[in-house]
Length: 427
Image (cartoon, rainbow, N blue to C red):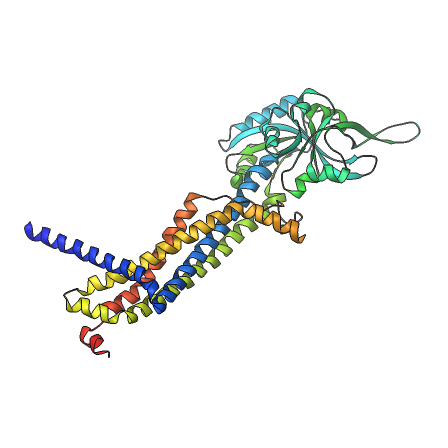
């Protein structure tokens, strides 16, 4: 028992000795030109890699959040349509069938149609979206509201909500009037006339997606029935799922329980390619940045090898005084770990600060240079979002630490294999 205690105490003293010497090398290294320069390069490389990785991962997280919450929160995950008009009882029966699926969390009726919005000075082709004002998707418009009030749409007839781009193109604001033209025509003895109604703008929203902000006009179900001359209670059923990325699988499951003549369309038809591109870009850019960190880790190998050569006499004296090879190798493991920790701390601080301000910096750059970083015709949003996740910071820190420890193996073994007599003779 006493021998085990002595062995354990010796091991602890060995670890403490190696750690103290390594920390002294790190602190005193900045007074030695070679060691200082190599340590600075290692820390700078790791810091840059960590900062860039955190920044890019935060931006990708922001893109995914905006697409999931804002864009996909307003458009249906799945849309159920029929090839013939259905009665209220038939739609109710379909709603009950759909809700039995455990992946479905909400359904709401909708009446959609193409149309034209026009003012005295401009006109635009739009998608008229008649929604239930008590539904969750309509309530989410509050998150994108930039002017006006949504309750106005609920309390009054002939009110509508416009996207910011559409409102700008039409030259209207809250309280202005817009004519909505239906594809239905009004028969007349003299001529066929278009069906239209004059609506007042109740609110303006900005989702960030050009497709929604420039084309979508939201009105109540009752107004949509009157404008489009629809006798049925709805033209489609919008379905919201637990996991938007699993919408296609949910559609396949639901179709097994639905009769012929019913169709399900997923959000992936319109935005799926963009979302997959975001995920693909995240993987490619992340891989490239991890390769950058790997290069910085290789630089750490070179740095530690140079430090070993610079400290050959110190190592020889330690071994002459009784330090074993394990203690000597531990010194450079601790030194590699210390350099990595400093690089991680500096890089994390820079990365978090950059990720927090990246949206404002990008907006300032666009205003000063007049260059649009994100073309709204290509990307689902036209601003640079960011979301910092603790899990990403932990994953990056652990990954860099692992690479730093791997990079320390060769220099540590080289130091442990040093022959004291040869080192002291200067061979």
